[in-house]
Length: 450
Image 1 (cartoon, rainbow, N blue to C red):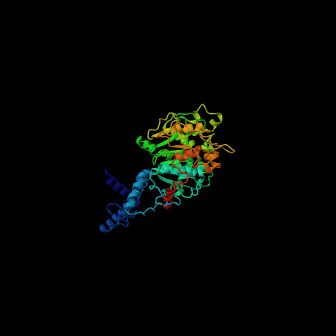
Image 2 (image 1 turned 135 degrees about the vertical axis):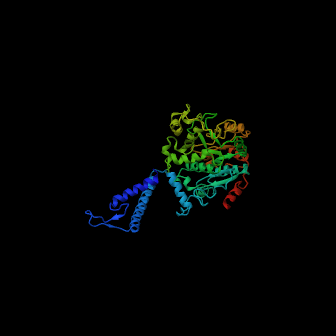
Image 3 (image 1 turned 135 degrees about the horizontal axis):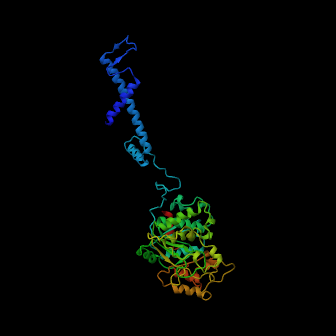
């Protein structure tokens, strides 16, 4: 018996139960005692019975369909229901969803999250950041250091970023909400530079570095090797007694590099919107720099030398090492092979940009500092001489704002007739002259007009 015949039989049975006096011979009104017996008209009786049956069948079928649809909606997958909704929308039976709003502070390009200058900055860009800006320059030493980059890299684009123009380059949602109230410039710089390199690529450097030759050689090396970034990493060649592993004062990277995207994201993820550096578990000054990069680089190469594994460190510096690398790395994980990084040791005696400047330049020393000369700083000068012909020796990093001498005698940093002054010698070797206008003037004016 098919579904149709069984359905009709069920309908007949239900009809008989509801109206016992209705039979196939259409007799109605028969009394129990047989005294009154009236047979209806064959046509009228049949019409009445057929109408009742049709109405009942219609009601029954509607109920059955509703039950089937309800059961289908309960047991069908969400994807099936979504496809049905999509079909309805295509037929115009449902109203169109409103366009996603552009949230305030997420860019002005019409696309949420895209900053104003995204897609407009060339990859070969040298980035400088100072929260209060570069007009006027923060100090004489910063002015001369930045000019050295302008003098030796005329074919590079330059961007001078401060808090006043930062949202032209990065979106507000890329920064922790407490960023604008944070008072440690070094931590702010680490956050900003990570985002700038993630979006645009280029070279992010501190403004207290003297640049002696073009960065093109190292840039071309990175491109030829198919590398994503060039990072200075301590302990690769020479020992290092401080708690940092990555030198956060100079990074070179291709645009959209995963290392720096994760670096920027991890700062927010690890420390939260309040930028609580106490969670770093090491040196708070390095929390957003070396401390955040270590766990990323360990995934690329688990055998990299780290602060926490250095047996030569004092107990004091061991306590200041970042702990995040060991905490977030599963020992059984293999090295990532989807990224390539060129690593250089900052203290490399042949090409490293970090010289033994501490005593000659009076780094972190109180009181007056004598003029550093070739005679009283012979060891420092020899380190410079040993490196200067190496094509990968491009700069010298100055710490603590250049040291006591640079801060107390800014007028002596570049002098015409002071050949024995190491600072003056270095800036002249970098292509600067005392009476020249700023080598960055044109680049800064171009940025202001754009």
